[in-house]
Image 1 (cartoon, rainbow, N blue to C red):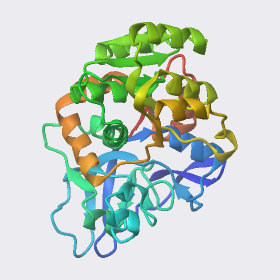
Image 2 (cartoon, rainbow, N blue to C red):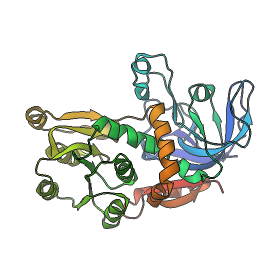
Image 3 (cartoon, helix red, strand yellow):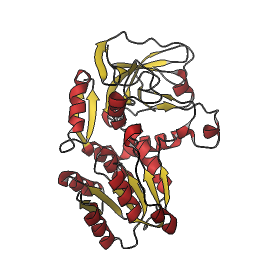
Amino acid sequence: MKAAILYKPLSLEVKEVEIPRPKSKELVIKVDTSGLCPSDVKVYRYGGYNVKYPVILGHEVSGEVYSIGDGVEGFKEKDRVVVAADAYCGKCRMCRIGKENICDDQLSLGYNVDGAHADYMLVPSRFIERGGILKVPDWMPLEPMALTEPFACTIHSLRILDVKYDDGVLIIGDGPMSLMHVIVAKAFGISKIAVIGLHDWKLKLAESLGATHVYKGSDKEKVIESVKNDFPNGLAGVSVTVVNEETVYEALKLSSKGGKVVIFSGLPINHSMYMIDSNIIHYNEIELTGSSGYTYEEFELAYRLLLKEYNQAMKIVTHRFKLEDIHQAIKAWDDKESSLKILLKRS
């Protein structure tokens, strides 16, 4: 089988390797679709604190069960499935207090266990034991189900913001995760959904997906003025999907008093230090927090959302590549003028 193996930062090769064989309580899936995540590109270029080399990249995946080890119950060969990207330990303090998404001892596809950018993927026993595999109905296309994991991350972000119907949410960025926020915010019944971005066609797509207000521009002060004209009291929830000093500044300036700002995307360590105006946070009692991953409940919510909204979700897919063309896919990801969500197909 083919697999995209990362040996160290900037050393990614697609090689022929043996199909994995499941041990007791493991199974192997034949991959149908894997999504190219921004974190895949980050790990490829900069590495990561929990990456164990060499590793097969990829964690957004759908496919069908290919082989099953002894002791696995509830699955059979040819079952169509989607697999969560992480298997939480269930024992650490974070898991015990309901924050399993920041588990102290998680297994993560494409980081410390081999992932989805391969023709076949081994699913370790903990993923199965913790309920990290969901069956896909026969009528449902497998391709959109590869988006379950990023949609789960988006659901987690919006649940942290906890925006009520009329309070309004602002999404900074116009990439695929931003547009997923729009889809989820609309599904949550939020009446005011604003998006700040740089590309006309992406903002137009955001409107078609449910955004009520869109703003284009790289001049942060002009953008802030435009948003404040429409929302003089600010917006109760702000998700920063493109993180830099300017976008964090915009988020704090545009949050309502008592509002929440979520830093949705992580960056390489050397690129993640910014100055912020602490007075904005202090005098307006703004809660600045992060959003990392998702819980298994949110993974299932994303699964159920996609069963209903997969046609909307697929509108953000702009490119499909073969696995062996992953370097070309990364170049396409870099071209923000033309790309949104990129998928790697096996057939």
